[in-house]
Length: 239
Ligand code: ATP
Image (cartoon, rainbow, N blue to C red):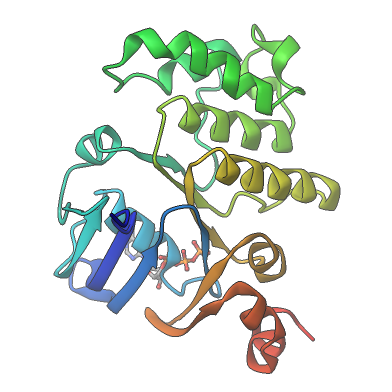
């Protein structure tokens, strides 16, 4: 049997109040893949993430997750169904320690017996954090905070991880580290939807990409094809 498409967003329309933002947006994440959604500031990328995460309601279209219709589910239902979100700006609990932040990431799990094992496994991905479990989250550097946010989402044992601009504001060497981590996480069997303004990085990590402009998908192709596409290069890569 063929695995169900991990995420199948079909014909989504959504906005804020009476202001429409997304128009008939369709994207898919197939099992085992890293998919990126790129587009300029204001194109509607975060709005799509909020629709998938159940944080805002769509006015049309559907969202299927692991073959189950999840249109207009609540955020906690999406988390329980296996969705992990790393929001823009990280939203860590700054006064809490790294250990407490990671423990909170597991709040919705019912398989409590696997949490200790996953705690070790997640820390294995982030050697730079291992010795700092008692440090308050707010004391970490920007790059480390991004890693804490990713680690916290992984503690929910997600099937799909949504990352909203994980490289924004990071130094180039840290961007490379986060990019390598995303590939590593994918190889562990977590599917990835990566939202990025940094098209160069996103397309070099991803298998497949979508370009969003003014709330519409205007291109969809293998990431390497998009990287080589002259229109994409001109509009998003500055070359
Ligand atoms: P960014 O990279 O800045 O996050 P984006 O592609 O994610 O950009 P969105 O944040 O989805 O874009 O915003 C798309 C449009 O929706 C913009 O015109 C924005 O002004 C509008 N918008 C976003 N959030 C709200 C909100 N809470 N209320 C009203 N309008 C909003």
